[in-house]
Image 1: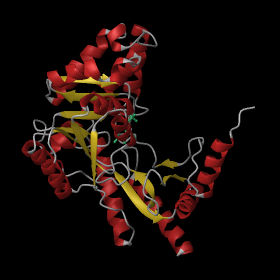
Image 2: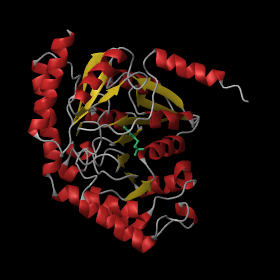
Image 3: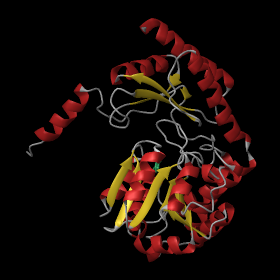
Image 4: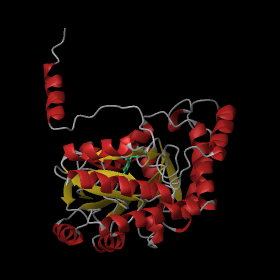
Length: 375
Ligand SMILES: Cc1ncc(COP(=O)(O)O)c(C=O)c1O
């Protein structure tokens, strides 16, 4: 028998710190966990578009895009998505994780310095780990730090940030990043995983909301979140997209998405553009929740999006509040170390188009009664 004591010891250590992860069946009750921000996951029109495409093209794409897995719907989707966002080109990836890993590792070599926000998603960090780049991780949203670091650095530079940070719900100072990228001739890449579908005209993202579409070199959007389906898309110039087709290993060496998923991506965008109330509701409910919670002294960090963190402190306390809410039919996520720094365990409350005002009221009152019992 193989000796697995090392692995069980690691698991025991995680359990002792209350941070051992385990798969659980989905919670029940009112759902504040999913990233299905526009409430499109069960939209019949989108499921039908996927079903039609599955019938037409079958259940899989048959190979990687470069080796036979390139049915016509992929290029049609990329052309339509590029036209929609006004870029020269677009490229589909299997998911946001593989898009980030592919982008970072392809764009960087040993002559590149990668500047990234300390709170950037694990997929961006993992992309860096596959590259030979030099790395500068700057404190969250600290543009002064970044400016100084850029000035001190020669060679090729890439600034890689997110638009909406998923554990804090706050918005990046994208205008400042665009200015700094121009001043320092750095490439600017923005991951819109949590801004896509929610911000900007027709939900085109925060980059568009701020009028920066011609000042950001590559934008990454995911379809598993606001659009309720799966996959990711990267928008940029023809040259950069062609470069990724040649160099992004997660794109080249992986079976392409099933065509049915691509059909659902396109339909989801169409529905989201038409049903603009969806993004408005998610943002309005989140703002109302923040307002009430802040008035009652809760810490929601600098949230300004559909994602509202409630900082609880210890992992133990955070799990206890989440369990209490669950007993009352409210399903929330307790986010702990290492996803967030120790001591800042939080409930991550996602507002979506599927919520009603009364759901928010129930949540507020359950949180207040937990606090009365515990403090
Ligand atoms: C900022 C960011 N980028 C990328 C991803 C990965 O996207 P996907 O779930 O499509 O792999 C996530 C998912 O949590 C994310 O938060």
